Image (cartoon, rainbow, N blue to C red):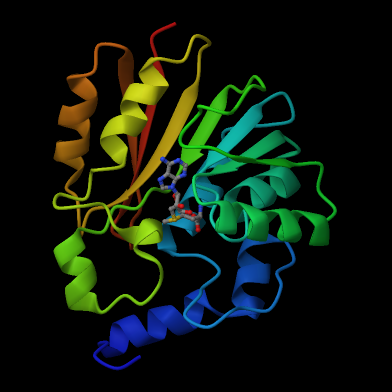
Amino acid sequence: MAGMSLVQAVAMKVYSSKFIAKRLFGIDFPALGPKDYYFDISTHVVVREVAKRIGPKNHLCDLGTGSFGVIGLSLWKKTGCKVTCVDVNPELAASTRKNIALNKAPIEVIDSSFFTNVKVPFDVVTFNPPYITTSAGKDLGIESRPAQWDGGEDGMQVVRPFLKAVAERQNPVQVYLAMNTLFVKGDAVRALVAKEPGLEYQETIRCRFLPIELHVMRNRR
Ligand SMILES: C[S@@+](CC[C@H](N)C(=O)[O-])C[C@H]1O[C@@H](n2cnc3c(N)ncnc32)[C@H](O)[C@@H]1O
């Protein structure tokens, strides 16, 4: 943890605590590899807020599910919704498959960039995307794989094509997109959505003590 501030070092301790992860998400986790972590603050906000808004009738696509499928697994456990987990990185998708087996959950994990290989119907999407700007990530000395956090020069290099992919869906989908306002201002995301005719921005869910915003939108179908 050389070069980290005290706050970062404490945050990494929290993110890599199996005890805290189990308490927050209500699911089981395997041991952690070096430089890895179970969740970040956006993961927690997504699960907390989306759990209040969906139920057994929904089919969730947890996009960018990461190493453990935390959002998908936790929302399955907490709400009884159907879940499909998706990640562009085959190594992370394989790791999530193991965690799904550990939790005995009826969840398929698909290797896909956005929705390209997803053939099952779903009506809700969660995405905690890589949004840390490349320069901030270097300054912070983040050691995990860049694909997990690197949002490019303005933090939105993954969000831009994601919004297009949602707008192109043929069936109605409700989207919960997490962003950290320390790296990307909410106005920048709202302006981007406003420019996309296939999307309707609905709501910003803000957190009292955390710099996380959940952008809620749907495609016009
Ligand atoms: C910040 S991590 C989130 C991990 C986990 N969902 C969580 O909240 O802890 C972002 C994830 O998005 C994935 N990702 C990035 N681009 C993607 C794309 N085009 N399609 C699917 N997943 C993508 C990365 O591989 C990474 O696992």
